[in-house]
Amino acid sequence: MYDLIIIGGGPAAVAAGVYAARKKLKTLLITESFGGQSMVSDNIENWIGEKMLTGFDLAKKLEEHVRAQEGIEIRMPERVTKVSEILCTNGKRPCDFLVETDKGGQYETKTVVVTSGSRRRRLGVPGEDKFEGRGVAFCSTCDAPVFAGKRVAVIGGGNAGLEAVVDLFPYATEIYLMHRGDALKGDEATQEEIGKNPKVKIILNAETQEILGDKFVTGFRYKDAKSGEVRELALDGVFVEIGAVPNSEIVKELVNLNKFGEITIDHKTASTSKPGIFAAGDVTDEMYKQNNISAGDGVRAALSAYAYILGVKKQSPAVERAENHLFHPAAKA
Image (cartoon, rainbow, N blue to C red):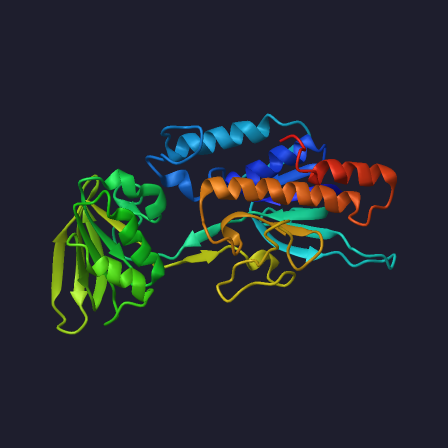
């Protein structure tokens, strides 16, 4: 029986693991790989404490940090397929949990921290996979500076697409906003802001056909949905901003999800609707999907799991002292 099982290998998972180790929790971390979505990034310039590093370097640092902790068992590569509640036989609540994996693993635990992230909704066209990290990007907040002085296209007419265009304002020289519909869907105020910028050209009824390139992206092919004409643009980069899909299926029968499939959490404690299950990072309804924020959320989730295990009802003076230290504003990091 573990005290805590952490699901995932990104910044939220590693932060949770480091803090679980500091609290001497018997912890199991299960992940397919380390690094999260940033693994494919060539340049990361907003990871606090590093001027610049690659996604590969970040993944390596994360893995090294969590493996340096005592008391953490790591299962990799292994993918969690389901989390279920163990039937309570003693009539007491709360119950423990069973975590199952694609390797046939079955692990029992008192608490779970879900940091399984999300997967970017993809176009599914030729060139998208080939040039990911070499001109094809999925995070404007992360990668916009890489495209300084470049011509780029943003695919997506919702808020994500519009905000990506705004993120590119200080960097790109030409920005094409491509949308397959006949009208943008994002906020009116952002549409107005975009419309005033001479760098931006909006192309509606544009059905993506292929992302072109050699070693890096060189162009983009699309079809005009009204005329049927196939056209090409010479480009240096393509931002795919058509939404993300949270990897929340493994707990969908246990916790509340919002309409986007994100795990809804109490943002003070990272707790979910199911006592004993906590969540952090991109799989949750956190507004800003950023590595640094995910790491902080992972710390919050681990500390909350620790408090949960101790017992939030202050069952003894020793527990009360531990919890007072945990939540006191002056408590050390």
